[in-house]
Image (cartoon, rainbow, N blue to C red; front, side, top):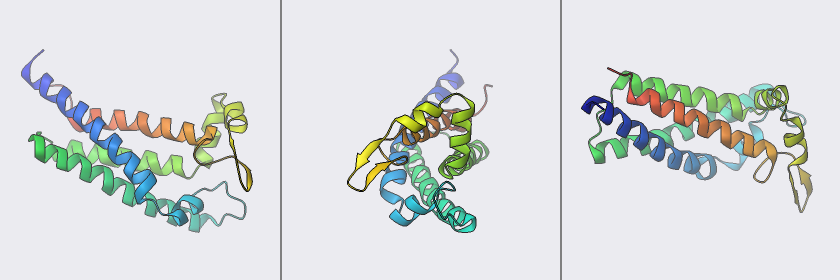
Amino acid sequence: MQHEDLVRAVVAAVAFGVMLAGHYIGDHWAQTSVQAYGKGLDAAGCVRSTAMWHCAGHVASWTLTTTVFLLVAAWWLKLPLEPGWLAAGVTLNAVTHFIADLRTPLIRLGRLLGRGGYIDQVGVVRPAGPTNSGPGTGLFELDQAWHIGWLAVSALIIAGPPV
């Protein structure tokens, strides 16, 4: 393994780890309740423009959170980030997060890939009754898996191409 390859591997590993931490903070602490409940196109009585606005607001704060985590780690560890690859990885992350958090595209993809039963059957019963989205549901688990998978791809992009 060449020195440049080792540096890229370290950048990818650190990027993934700190962006994963930032993802959980951004998804569960920075997101407002209004955004969490209003961003899905699958909600009863959904107004598309309102859902898109809530989703965009969430993705903006989420992207800021993951990027701050990444930049602080890069500064602390003196990692060599290339601005173009950094921008490409962060943008990919934001776009894929936005698509999934509208929920309808993720539901359609899940059903297309044979995960409809998982979406429909994995759920929790809350005081107000059973729910099909949010923590403890199949849709939530598919959402988190989607995000973490794209975090990994984004981290590889941020590390840059082989030289």
